[in-house]
Length: 166
Image 1 (cartoon, rainbow, N blue to C red):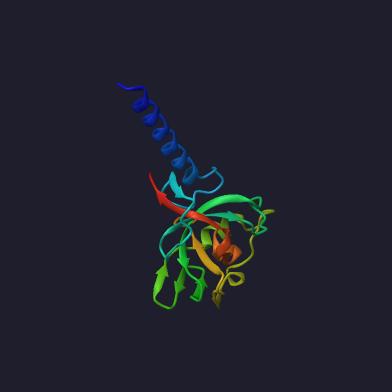
Image 2 (cartoon, rainbow, N blue to C red):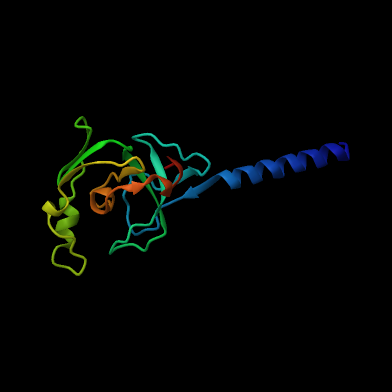
């Protein structure tokens, strides 16, 4: 085999591997909160254009009593900028038609009376329209800490599109 061919293939392989590492990362829950049914995600950090129903990888910069700011999370995009969102204890409705049946009461009840008490259902029941730079993020499990509790996420916090692996 000619030396040129070996050098060319080596450089090609190194370039391809460099491209993969620059664009994609593997993400997994840190153990604090299992908010999605999947446990491992492939994240495309070059693709930040998200649609409703897709998974997004983002930096949590909202001050909250449970997690430090700066953590990177994966959640489902439930609503896009300009959408009307209605949050009740048993569901989230988007533009009065799309409904996500996810109950916040188990989490509120589990933390009631503790030093991490989150308040009552009425504190989280609200209707609003997302601003042009906001999205609404949801998990899939009853113990998901998401936009129902901390509000909309700024679009610029999204760092990539996520794909569930398993």
